[in-house]
Image (cartoon, rainbow, N blue to C red; front, side, top):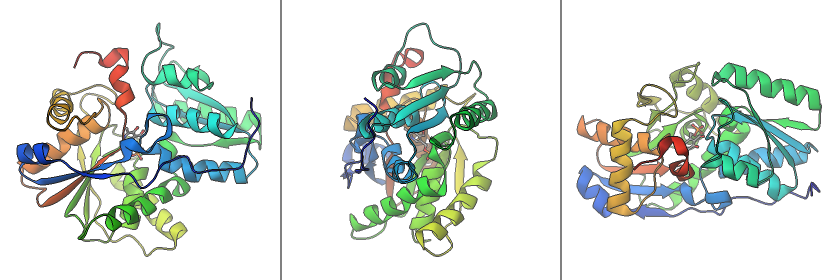
Length: 312
Ligand SMILES: Cc1ncc(COP(=O)(O)O)c(C=O)c1O
């Protein structure tokens, strides 16, 4: 059951770059959607790309157990559990909050992929990180520890190459890219991979303890060095659409999820991409974002089926 095998890529690439004509007409910009919700692994999402790099590293280091952490409906944890199943690795997830009375959304899939789950009873990010480090230390050198969201230079390297992929799909680079920022690893990789004239607007959905304006440029610099690219020159631009707290939906996000579904049959999610689309709409309305805009769809629609978000 846990026989490890050699690493083979997990994501199906390149992902499509789709025109979104009906949503463009609503918004008043030319909107394209980079479909990283279609990365193939376990219902898709941005984390498949990162896991290609992170779990290759784990396999090359001879690890047999992956430990990581996230919010209760973490997409990263679901995709890590899936990747471990495929690679024959053990997976231990430390999830925020108390064990729910009924499994729903991502938790159903975490269990289906055979992950061991610890519900820590708190949603405090530093408590979650401390616990996951403790578990990794207890297991010893065969454990591969990934921080929240896989936000390391190795993980973010995936988005340097995703930036190359996007540029190869367009006759001219876009004016703007809009992306959800959780750990900020996706944004950091994009900054490290893109020319400075492509502006990236990150939509902060979780207000992490270290502000994204500090952590993302720092990670982008380390990632560029790892990729052998020049020091990132693009500006760090971020807008807060977290609402009262991480993983609670806002009215604007709910409207954005509905709008995307009803114009393009595009499935956004309550925690990340719904808020990112709400952030994009607000940025267009205040005149910050215009021209050709790529909405980087990072996945997450499994959370539409979580009990706490029922009722679209
Ligand atoms: C659907 C979705 N979008 C965006 C993000 C944020 O990506 P990052 O952690 O690289 O900022 C996540 C992170 O878990 C996610 O699950």
